[in-house]
Image (cartoon, rainbow, N blue to C red; front, top):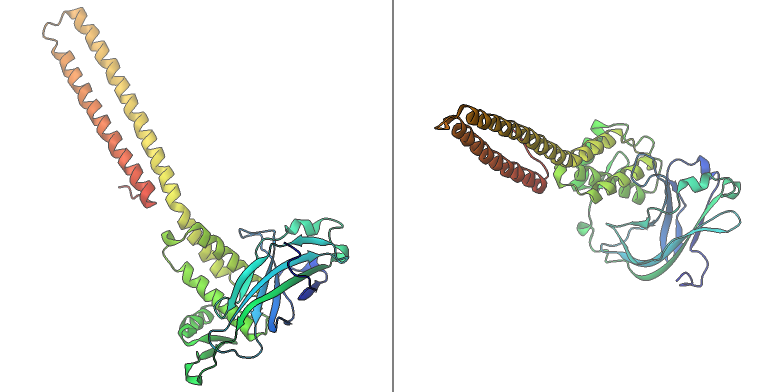
Length: 335
């Protein structure tokens, strides 16, 4: 599989002083298959799900404007090497991946654990080399069309956004004016891509908490990590994601709470039932001793115990239904 293409690497990205890198590392733009690309290497933040792994992505970019509907379909894979060109990691081949205006980035989220790079002798002279091998399957530059058909963009604090994104983008910068003070990437296509990721992430987190899946929240953590490493100041968004994740977990806590409630109620009822049974045995014994002919006290106690047993049965059924409802709905409100 790894001899799929007998060729030299499409690009070789050499990173010196790797152990000192804490944020995203972006290569220069290179050409492969007649198209422009660049590599992104990301050491993940320890606060997020894919912590302690190195991520590598291939980004499609263009120095010249393309027509609407452009697309590149490519196969590619990555190699991680040390200074002596010894292969440290080889990714699987990403086959028939479509790059287009709405999907500019594809890659491997988890390559090698960062702990490997901290081991003595793993990296020679603290130098990491990333190679990418690209094979173009199909490409289409699209039709340029009339100027009136092109999507107009507006510059907001150095980011080109669509007209439909102007209001939310301005709102973000108004509430967080230092949002992009450390964002250093100059390529306008890359800047636009990052802003789209940020706007989509905010839109996702604004949904009701119960609508978020575990996979969606995991992806949100990953995206937030990538945005932070690129230079965005997003402590406020990190806090919001933490609250959303906590609310998503709350229904599970409610199910455990109702389980404990059912268990406690059952224990109390069993205790009361045992006490009454003991009492009726005592009354029965007293009856025999006093030769109570009509047995009125015994009959009274027997009636009470039967009523209580019926109440216990009904309450168990009711608690069982409440527990089932809590499991189906994900939460339960108890008066």
